[in-house]
Amino acid sequence: MTRVTTGAYTIGQWITNSASLTPDRVAIEYLDRLVSYRELDDASTRLAIGLLAHGLVRADRIVTLTENRLEQVELFFACAKAGLILAPLNGHSSAVELAGQLESFDPALAVASRAHSDRLTQACSLAGANYPLSLESLADSLERDSSVVDLPLVGDDDGLLLISTSGTTGRPKGSLLSHANCYWTNRSLDLSIPISGDDVVLQVLPQYHVGGWNVQPLLAWCKGATVILEPSFNPDRIFELLAKRHVTTMMGVPTTYLMLAQHPCFEDADFSSLRSVVVGGASMPTALLDRWHERGVEVVQGYGLTEASPNVFCLGPEDAISHAGSVGKPYAHVEVALRDVVTGKLIVDVGRGEILVRGPNVFPGYWNDSSATTDTFVDGWLRTGDVAERDDAGYYWICGRNKEMYVSGGENVYPSEVERVLCLHPGVLEAAVISVAHQRWGETGQAFVVVQTGAVLDVNELIEHCRTYLASFKVPTEIEVVSELPRSPLGKIDKERLRG
Image (cartoon, rainbow, N blue to C red; front, side, top):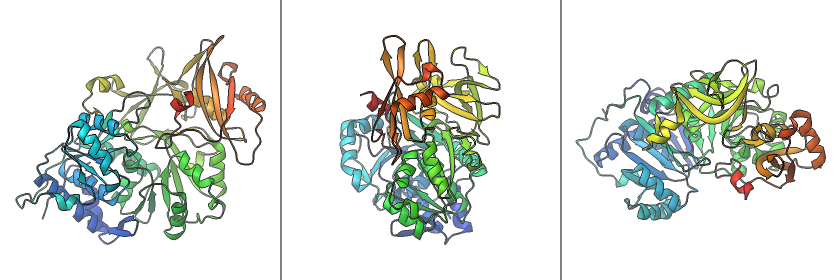
């Protein structure tokens, strides 16, 4: 019998344990395929042995370029069992961008699905790397070596995932997440947003994003639940699955829920089985939150970042209305502090400062980038670059990024704070604020807003609305109504495109 990983916090054993307890339960529903826990465990073990027989050794990287696929889940657990590191690349990246990541990650193996094979082949050529293998036929293409029987002992601090950051604040970097990081972030998630073996989890978030693994899917496989794995986000398909497969929970970004809420099927959709939905990437606009509540669906919100694996704050459904706009309080096992952006001192009790994070969920550092790693830590705390305000009840409110902050008439302004106020207006669906040069004040805010369906918005009245909630220097001097906001492939608002 092949030995499995034995580290206390290693992830490979999760699927083996679930296969032992519920071998015939469906682990993954992928299009027309139903894969049991026994099948997933066996396939990942065979693949792990095949990778080792192929010559890969502990801590080797395997890069993938693919849409969400069953084969990538098998590869993930194979890496977990063999002590290898999976580095899923963004399917929207250009060949030039991919080549840079290949050069940085120096993978032992490059793998692509058929849909992405040509681009990864081009990237490999640019980087002088080996041409990619086919993800769909990876297991059959590996060498067989009967001498490889036992899997290596994998340690809790061994690398498991290498996730590229979005690069919105500079060039993309590879965030290395260990087995222990993934264990603890899922442990924290389970204490706030539990999953049981009876759950049916819908996954549409891409697997090149840390949330595609650590916000529900891995926890679901640990608990013996069923994950419906979708290659991409398709609203028509989502409504079909909600009705036919009795989905109990799902995770997405605000754009996910906005597109669903704007769909003709939304008002009559069958949400009877949908216990809750989880939102990440940005705060849910109040108007959008209300629409989902009107349909009887609880919304769990929060805040996280790749370097924290990603879960940091959670706002439960019981606080969604009373603390609209807040990201809630820290997850269990996660320490948070606020650091004054001027003095560098930690803030006690109520105050505003840069969010610092500490705990077993925090990554060990960026791949092959000691300088960036050093810069992102201060006195053992992870610097997030995000600024938040903490109220007297311990709730946190994101104000914006340090690098997004602008100075108007000598006063600091954080765009997220202004955006939150704009979205309080009943006629505003979404908002984004950027800084623009101003002859008198140095910088002021320019807002872009999307109007609620059927609403008529008076820009002057919206400015007065802002004056009710904000200091005068924070009120945008210009508001432009747009049909939609530009977004990154993950659905985050792309402010660089707004700046033109």
